[in-house]
Length: 383
Image (cartoon, rainbow, N blue to C red; front, side, top):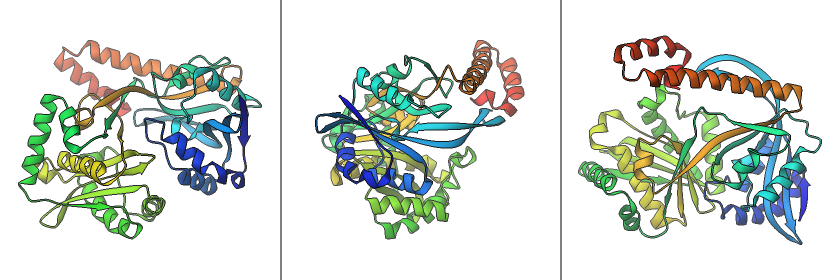
């Protein structure tokens, strides 16, 4: 097995077909090759596109991007301090081709030669995967979760008809979901699917107006109708990956959703609805319309919701759930990297201690509320 590295954008043209072929083997959403090229050109960052070759055939492919960044230390939304770092990040949080553990070790050993970085940002990966097992046991490195707890990645298999998908839902979830859909349908909604570049501006104008009314807006999950966002979504549309959805009642937008469709997988990004319509469940109805559209009008086989909690629409609508964690790693022999490791682990211990205390007093209503009010300014009570 030969490991080869490319660091010149001019050399990457031949990898389009390989990237697409290997991406279709992945369960999670993988950004398009066009998006990788855009990022590399726009950022000017150094990179290494690493391929594993068996003869003339590429069996694994990954892009590692090198850049200067700022590592923020915070407790929820309360900032503690920042530190500058030389970071290498794994684009798309995946090594394409589903390589086994021995091959992954070879790839990371190759990347580690002449390191030149303080921190490796792996991204969100499945905890039951060769990649996770390798970074947890890589010689000379230690790894940790960025978030306090392991999370769940929610997905939907869309192979088959829309009725097949509905039949695969849990009975109680199916009853509730279809009741919500029927309630919304009685209001006579109109749906619009947006995928052309020339339609992005109108989509964004309507979606941003709805988003500003949602509870997610106050939590920081915002969609802006600004030049930067328009350029980004229009670029996706030109690449053929953008898919946006608007639901309206009497001509007034009441819900939106959007994501990217690439390599037969839809990467769900955001949704929201006008709270004045909450009693007729526009959010649920729109997502079900998205499912039907993807099944009947595209080649989509997997709907990737991303990570989320065990309660809420993602868990109700999904048919597959997998443990995941957002991971970072660093070399234990570098003094500065060791400092980053100690700081991360110390802060995580503090967070865990605070949350364990809250859980311990969960049955003491008055005391629990008092403690939460003390910790809330530091973000601990909501972490």
